[in-house]
Length: 303
Image (cartoon, rainbow, N blue to C red):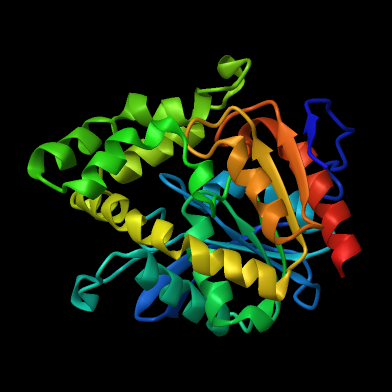
């Protein structure tokens, strides 16, 4: 049954027990994948997949809270953060290509079994990986990671027009919303007290998107997102067949992925746990303590 949570739980970390988070790179699929990692190497693994326009930096507070009991790995997807895609690689940016690269990354990291945390773009990336290797997925945590058409909010309107007609004026309309203010809005919209959102996340994201050539990568991925929607039935069939343990923990005020996306999981995985938080799209910015506590309880039970 769905529930809404806004109460704070006690902080579990103290200066003496915060697991150290390493930053590293590894080559996979011809790409130098930047990633953050914490936790014991032999602990059960969690793979955190970020969304647009972020990077693994968005998990800076979540990683140590999970690493007390799990090996936690968070890569930067190609086109984002500090992952380096050499020009000679002639990389074709699509969600299919990103999923292939991150699959190669998990293999380079010797991740044979892992729980998936999917957020925003991390959802079609991770769910493509699950379709290809369902035996590797031990559980799924979806934080505003959508797999249902009903979960697409009105904020997708300009992008839908771009899907229907990728003419220059529609591409420009999407470009016009990817300003620093537009990126900040993704962090603050639907947050009861937006002044509490730390500026580092959206400032870093805006700087990364503004790198030469990166805006066109992002516009290509927005266009390709239509292919994710076409795959929703396949994702849903995977849910019905494999029935992975699933927790959907959702910022209920998200204008992009609305609560119907969380509720959709119950249709295909009747035992899915659904929890709503009184926040927006980037729920880890306001409710990282609650998300970590819910994940640890859920993942411990799923083991």
